Amino acid sequence: MFIAFEGIDGSGKSTISSRLAGYLKGKGMELLLTSEPQDESLRHPSQEDAMNGFLMFYRFMADRISHLRTLENSIAEGKIVISDRYMLSTIAYQGPLLEKFFGSYEETMRWMNEASRPVTLLPDVTFLLDAPPALALKRISGKAREAFEREDYLTKVRDYYLRARWPNMVIMDAGLSIEECMTVVIETLEKLLG
Ligand code: ADP
Ligand code: TYD
Image (cartoon, rainbow, N blue to C red; front, side):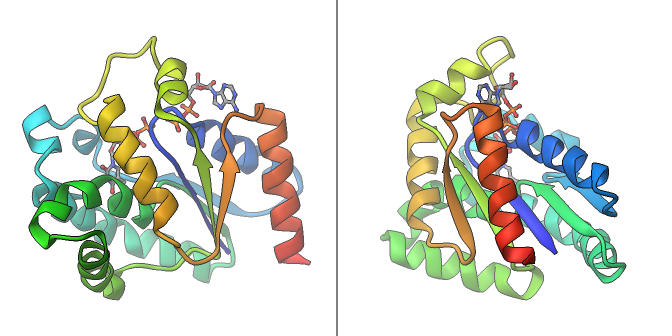
C-alpha cells in the first residue's frame, strides 16, 4: 500500500504522516516513512528559481525519478509506504507557474499528467490536508520563510490541489486538531484495508 500526504506548507503533513507511521508500527506493520523532495537543496531554492515553473517541474521530477526505485522496492517487499509529498505537489506548486505557457488550467494539467505518467506511481490513497494559507503560514511563522511560502502563491497552489481531481484523494480539513485528523486518516485506512 502506498499512502501520500499532500497540502501547502504548514498544513500538517509531516506531523500527521509521522503520527500515522508511529501508529502503524505500534500495530506491528512494516513500513517506510519517506518524503519528497529527497534532495535537501530543493527545499531551499532562490526566489528566482522557485518562480521558474519549468525549472522546478523538471528538478522535482528528476528528484522523484531517483526516489522511484526505493518506493517500488518497499512496496514489492510488502511494506506500507507513507510519503510526505508526492506527484500532486508538483502539479499543485508548479502548475500555477506553468499556466502562462499553456494558456489554460486544462492544458497545463494535460501536459503535466502526460509528462509525468510513465515515471509516477498512483498512490492507493492521497490525503490532502486542506488549509487556508493564512492558517498554514501562521503555524510555521516561527521558521524562516522559504521561497514558496507566500500567501498569494499558496492561494494558487491550494486552488490547484483542490481542482486536480487526483484519483483516490481524500480531502481533509487541516484546521481540525491533530487527534481529529488522525481519526479521519485511520478510519479511511481501516475501510480500505477491510
Ligand atoms: P507541513 O509538514 O505540512 O509543513 P507540519 O506537520 O510541519 O506541516 O506542521 C506545521 C506546524 O503546525 C507544526 O508546528 C505542527 O506542530 C503544527 N500542526 C500540525 N498539524 C496541526 C493541527 N492539526 N493543529 C494544530 N497545529 C498543527
Ligand atoms: P517541504 O520541505 O515538504 O515543505 P513543508 O514541510 O514546508 O511543507 O517541501 C519543500 C518545498 O518544495 C515546499 O515549499 C513545496 C515545494 N515542492 C514543490 O514546489 N514541488 C514539488 O514537487 C515538491 C515535492 C515540493
